[in-house]
Amino acid sequence: EPYDIEELHVLGKEMAACSYYGARKSIKLSHMVLLPYQSLLSKESRDSIGLSLKDNVVIIDEAHNLIETINDVHSTAINGRQLVQAHAQTSNYFEHYKERFRFSNAKMIRKIIFVLKQLKDFLLTNQQEE
Image (cartoon, rainbow, N blue to C red):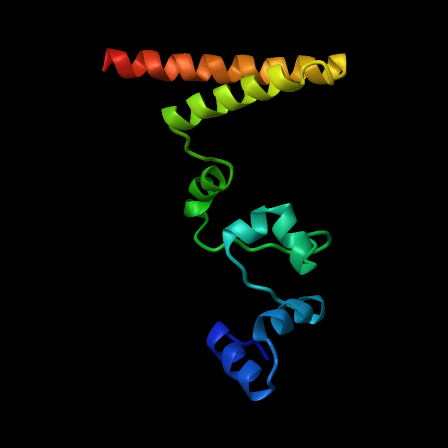
């Protein structure tokens, strides 16, 4: 019989058990699992609860919200201050340890520093124009 979150909470209290972990363990025995988009779209989230999409039917309710959710899951916001700090810290780190890096590692860190500088300069230039 399916349970909603409130019913699981009550059942957990009655059994003196954690309803969260009980629900997670019951996924393997379930015929139907309802979960938010974020959990469905994230492989790490699915793996953490032992949910595989292979050979299963996935029904997406209110799919018109799916694109926005995908964008939210794979997006982040950073500001100019964070870029300035990231550039400064990465540059200092590289300068301090550059003698210890293998060539390939040094090359990758230089690329990161380059990208951070370009993003920082772009953002600062746009702020000055506004």
